[in-house]
Length: 367
Ligand code: GDP
Ligand code: MG
Image (tube, rainbow, N blue to C red; front, side):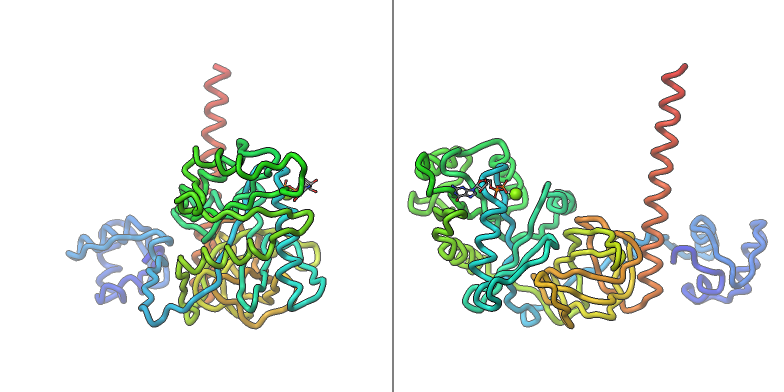
């Protein structure tokens, strides 16, 4: 009970409020029923009354353990991240994929730049996450979470394995995510896709046709060659993973992008990992909170619901969230507000501490 009032404290312990006030008085603390007790006082008085109370921080207080039973879990679409060395064709490949996949539902469909997109292949959804700088990816990995189920590693057939190729491999391996290799630019005269395969074996990435575990597809993003093969391969890889989530729960997931929009205010793109998100839901995302005013999908359409593996923009948060932050729906708006504000406060305190330290450092250096 962090910052509990005397009344609340007595209630939680099941003791008479007057008894608490008396004991506080004997410690030289004059408090009324509605005043808050500090954490230290809470522990002292509890001890005094022969009770062991541990004051938890807000993260613990609101910690949840998701315990879904087997029948709650339903199949969900895969979430895919395209990675690779600069100029090997990540953006071109995503464009080609969007065109190929989106065309069925919406000819020439224009996807918005919200950091994620959704593609339809024969009625099956694949969610793609753009990772400029892999910001959210890295933040979540530090927390042991992962938003992506499959990494598509793009390697240019005329250039081969390069430093950022290796970086991407390390990311995927650390997150324990399977790698599908897209050998790109096979239309180019100098393309040697087999050399790429050879080079990748040094990093433990071995094609299935060579007895390894990785699926390879030779593509040309520019000439739109074998893009549908690549999508089918991604779905094959996803099938192996048997991805599931509980859609019938309060939503939770991760912020993958966030910005301040001139007209719309703070906008967070989130990926739903569990549950179903609705307009009107109260959400906490890192140090931000608010009631969801609108949900907007990558096609720019308003949605009444967002399911596991759906990326959506959330409008209605009170501040700009941070990529990689967790988001969660709260039943009680006051709880949401409390958690967000306590997090914000502690963040400010930490920053202050840090700036004081650097001032000290500065003085030390001057002396
Ligand atoms: P990124 O930095 O990985 O996002 O790479 P881009 O998608 O921006 O592509 C880098 C350059 O490679 C651009 O000039 C593309 O037109 C070109 N490119 C991408 N894919 C192909 C391809 O399949 N064939 C050829 N010939 N060029 C490509
Ligand atoms: Mg790019």
